[in-house]
Length: 481
Image 1 (cartoon, rainbow, N blue to C red):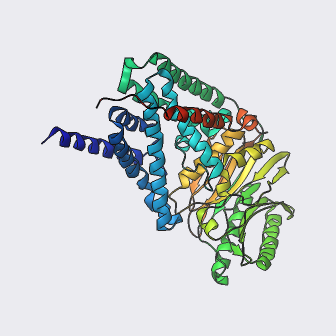
Image 2: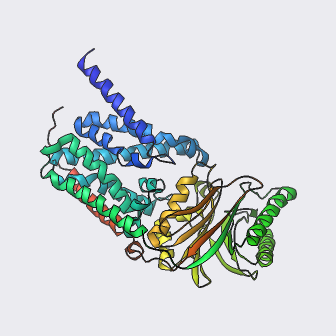
Image 3: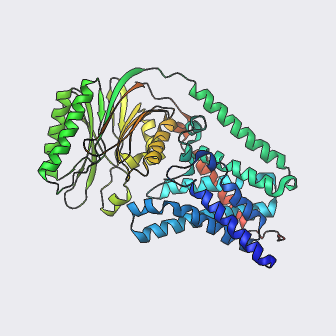
């Protein structure tokens, strides 16, 4: 066997192994510790092989990794869109790795350790600002259960999280590939260790702060069965009756605020009036604050509404969903623009629906309105993305210092505090459904730097990325195989 064939087989095996590892990083339930290391092999392979070979190695690994979510994408998008999404994700990974390679190979200086994290954060920031799905699936959310590191979001949002997550593998790849030949390399490695240590110290210290306020009992109810416009009256009645019974049970157990999931029923405008009267009477009878979400379809542009009823049966607040999931965009749902905050026992309660909480800008808007609690009805996809959606929503609470009560269909019922701690959690289920009773200390919102400055770090990385890419245009030094 010739040396050229041996080299190709090694490269193919290395790319395959790196791609298979990547599948556990970009999945809907990622292996959190692997995220800190998985990009390093890709970077290392790119550094150690000539440009032409590095391209196909990285692209093969990226395709193998991102295609792991094929089944999930197929649930929410037609096949051509799924193929396009995987192709674009693969090309994006290839761009980030190969652009980093060009600068690192050319310069081999300490500052190149920041190229990969800066490019990653810049792309993440632009996706969050420009795409209809924002930066959904960002690697930052992979740390959803690691509370000490998550606290950095209170300072710099997901950009701070992502910067740290990508800085570590960048430093590892640089150290393994070039070691002492990196000019002033000790600065890069020392800064990486210092930033990581400082972030962990801040996180542990922040988690030690006590939570003081008013203990409030929340009830969460979810029934997975949908009620469409053409549902029979007997079918719809059986589901709505179960909601009524569950609300009454939770109220009897002491629930003061009860949250129902997204679009429990699709309604015509005339039936929407009847539904509003029904839930108004239910809130009055149970003497609770009752959150309800319904879809209203007038035959032209459907609406996704959230209602909040007071214990006196009045419609206290309402909210129209801002950001639509792919099926809703396909059905041309109309988007809302207003925010809704209502005082309950002296604390501001905000309303948002499912995908809205994937967008840091919307979460920050509620932080600026001094929300103490967010009530979030949701509808996840076939139980596959429940963990990711719940943790993504919890990060909004860390960023802006508020608690969140989330009721999902085909997902999780949960409550989280301003530090991202999941206080209670239960899977949803089909009829007769699931319910959750949780006690939460409701306090005034915790002031955060992120609420004040927003994604400043992300946009600084966009500017820095432009600077790096201008250097990218310079001819690189010739690299020996």
